[in-house]
Image (tube, rainbow, N blue to C red; front, side, top):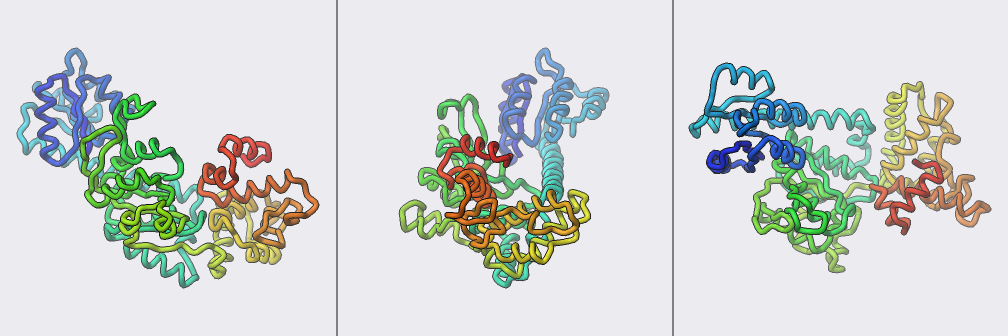
Length: 453
């Protein structure tokens, strides 16, 4: 666990920190309530060991503030002035346990064990809350069903590997469901109750990405005004999901390799090595072998990644799944909207089957959700589908009137449809802006102009 020791006596702080670390935990300390609350706001801690008397402060008042602002953090009170009255009051205010000073090693182990059980329970609740939120917000179970032999084999490999600590590499085009499958692997693993933490590799500059991964110390770069832990620390004991790892800067790759091989890392601007125990799942839409040959990706990191590697087939290669997914998505969104939509017309389903779906599952889901919202009938017709899906050229950029490039339509109409299609087929707005060759601010203005917000 990550433990914060709050005591105004430096001797007690030092000895408790040594005892905590001797039990295999990580400890830090604060000398007063204000500093403790600030540390809890800025960093993650599983347990607080809080003194009852903090100089002029009453530790019970600090306890009340911690329980009010950080209800998922366990608090154990400790003091040299124990009494039944204070023990009862501490429990009533939300303390998990009570430890009398000076404490014996066995007493400390007992409260740490209680704290671990509480922390594990909180993480399990958080995992279940995320799963419920995902189910309520748009991920029908059909994404783990398939009638396609190649896709069935992918799921079989992934879910057999889920119960092992092996690194998993998921390849595939944008929108094929790599992040959804990564979470499913985590949920089927032995660390399902522990954190699942995502790092989007293309989202930040090299310095900020390194800080997001490993953390930093105050003053390590411009804007680093305080110490900060990274995603590796947040994922301790669980799964670290590196999304689009093919875009990881070369400068960070050796540090990631060290994390895998030696199970340790250093925060940015710090020389102290810290242990890490995380299971890594990575995903990319790039050809990593080609990147290795081009000198853009380390060969040793590639082989370390390539333990269990699978490729998610694009939707156009899964015709046996397409109609099933479209109908399942429609049933899901119709249920969410409370609308009595029964299915697709023959013409609409023919258009769905004919379209190549460059944005894969993500684009299909967006199109079906849009149709479910806009339709005035009990069945989805071609008028409910975006014009680009109805383009006879399928893969070309289509104008709203259904024409292809060179048709008698304005540049504005072509731009609007092209932006819609690229955004639908991208993992993020930053990726869409990169594909379009514009910055995110320009993309935001154009989406607002065309009513895409």
